[in-house]
Amino acid sequence: MKTILLVDDESSVVESLRLILKDSYRVLSTLSGKEALKILEKEHVDLILLDIKMHELNGLELLRKLQPFDHAFGVVMLTAVNDVKASVDAMKLGALDYIVKPFGVEEIKITIEKALQFRNLSREVRYLRSEYKYPSLDKLIQGRSRIMEEILDIIARVSRVDSTVLLRGESGTGKELVARAIHFYSARRENPFLVVSCPNLAGDLLEAELFGHEKGSFTGAYERRLGKFEIAEGGTIFLDEISEINLPLQAKLLRILQEKEFSRLGSHSVIKTDVRIIAATNKDLESMIRESRFREDLYYRINVVPIHLPPLRERYEDIPQLAEHFFNVFRKECHAKMECISKEAMDALLRYHWPGNVRELKNIMERTVALYGNEGALTHKHLPVEITGVSSLNLQQVKSDKTGLISLEDEVARVEKRLIEQAIQQSGGVKSKAAKLLGTTRRIFNYKMQKYGITDTEN
Image 1 (cartoon, rainbow, N blue to C red):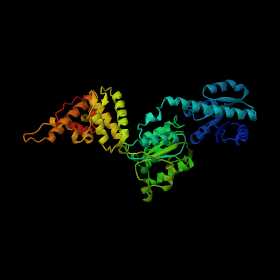
Image 2 (cartoon, rainbow, N blue to C red; image 1 turned 90 degrees about the vertical axis):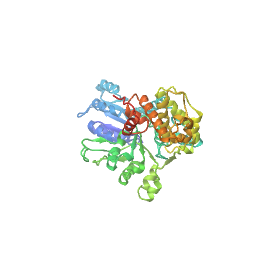
Image 3 (cartoon, one colour; image 1 turned 30 degrees about the vertical axis):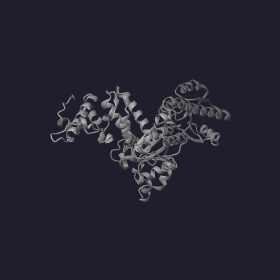
Image 4 (cartoon, rainbow, N blue to C red; image 1 turned 135 degrees about the vertical axis):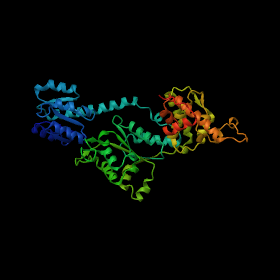
């Protein structure tokens, strides 16, 4: 049932409209423009019937204050006969239509119906236009193995509904990417997609992050702050590693899933919310339930549509496509001359067990292209030793000591020095960037530079 908010300082007009509309719509009302703003902070509204002439805050002033609520609802103005010019001004500010008082029952019903239809049509137009913003699903998520085809099919189907989704899989399998895909191909795509990393915030901080807080609600709360569930209204919240949420906060999250409402920290006011929740975890929630560390009722609420993302080692047939995809992405970003991945390098990628999954493959492609992008092809010698193993060392080129044995320490030092020099060159002499390319800290990077006598080129 659609919700209509009546805003008019004449109680007789408000009551008349309520009687006309109550059987077909959920009706909210107020005699004050300022009170209307408070209602809109808490309630989802589809259409506002707004009187132009009000004492405290007139209709045009209120309409200007409604601009931040863009696309959330439509507005139809109520006006006396001599206020037609003001109504036209209101339409320039975004009002959909106006009704002249006194009005007939059929007139008001038809105007409201047309305004709601226009609002829905506008949402559909934005939806269709957004098709040009996002790539097709098969381009957004790489992989054509049988299991990935099944997952793509689930994503396509679940995007059409509003069900809560639980994404499960090891770290680096692409849970956030799948969550984004579900949002981007849903009717919520024009509204926010917000990521909340649950392990990064302690209990109270996470609660304030999700639900917001009032001024003075806790030490350091110097002003009122909106939480993610208010900011994401109409959109999607991705709760990454939901297993890290403590039990008291789990109860509040359950309330949102059941009642679609919450309260800010330090407030007893109830705020209605329309947000889709997609949760993710790499933990065994069933074991946590048995150990009383995760609520069983919350588990069933978030596990409406479970999607398991397999580790990369279980879909080896996708590695060539993923590697080529990341290779081409970073080749363009780095303006690299490197043209292809050699067969021997691809064979090495296929032999590796990928404990870090797709994220690890992506990082290795980025690092390799950044360091060796000016060479003709990506070969096995450009890949990290953990991928190529001992076989990647060209033993014929390794110098031997006087006993004829290979000096592994000297070879490692030679390779390390060459990598550091190439990283410095690729990063334009910025050591922090060079250290990041090599996946090490600035302190260790500085130590290695001194060890190998590499000149500091950073200003």
